Image 1: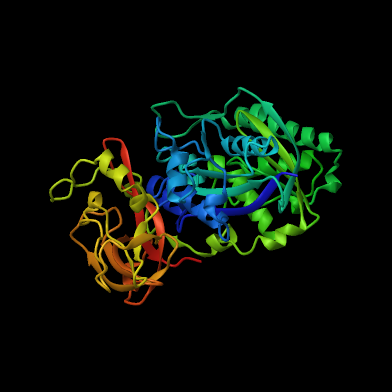
Image 2: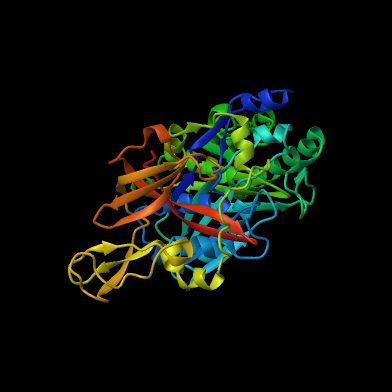
Length: 482
């Protein structure tokens, strides 16, 4: 029976205390804190992080498809799933798809992946869900929304979590929306949005799938469904289904916030971290209708192995010091331009030619002596491609070598207090990779006061800058997380 073979998630390192929003604008403060994607993160970079977590121990080239779900795509006309697949070094002959336009984009993508696997069109499909929505300054949504991602590997055989059945409802009512030109999420009056939308439609889907499977509330081990910003509404649905609060998965509102289309899947990953063979999970998501699934946990759950998932990401955090930093990271204030020459225009031809070097972080390894080498692509200020081995001087005797999954240590670093940076000072590290190879990368998610020579580092996929609507993605270093 088709189901999930593995899972993964990503919560940004940075969090902000909601009291900071109250300090800036006054009004009614919400409790807790929320996750904040860094200035160089977006839905694509977070999706890559969650996918890497999900695929630990798996060969990405064995996966037959990648479905990406989000309501905050960096592009209106470009397939983001193909960028993520390239960063993961997946095969080119795979199915890719973007699902967007609704908060249940994640469960729609999961349903599509299950259909493809059950129909024999693919043996496995990776579903990745990520969102990075913004509420308008001084509003409740600015405090309530959070950023994050989740990933699920859908397979035909050998699932750790089998999908027994599903049930869907289409409903045109929308309590939250964003028009084509809107930067911030809009919402209707809370009572109507909840009474007519969330609280009316979601229980129907959950009851529908339970009746389909012949289940009662006593047969369910855990209930996982996304929450609105009003946490009382979340628990009220469980009460209507006669499910005790102890069986309801935490919505993470106090620690992460509402992560939009990624919320239900992130909550499911958190539930699977604690699931045991024989558990039955009721999983659902709402957004212009609802999707509901009954999941059966199999003994294969023990073989999934350790993931960073939700729990370990929550343990690793760095607080954003003030609201002004949040404004700067979100480009909501105009800052003085750097007093340096502008970057040259982005060349699509150069990005295409160096695609594997940029998105997959491929270098070379000498076939004569085995020494790995990496040369920064010319499009990002590097030199000519490597032709001579730095160790044995052999010429043009190389094989491709991927550095993206390699850890390393700082050889040397610099902190630039003069360069314009959304998170000053700008940090650049020279990293010695495990297994050999040395290269220069920007450093992110770091505390400048704690950077030392010999510090362990890992690679992370981030956004460098945007030029004429072209988002330039590349790899950076960061202190090993979790």
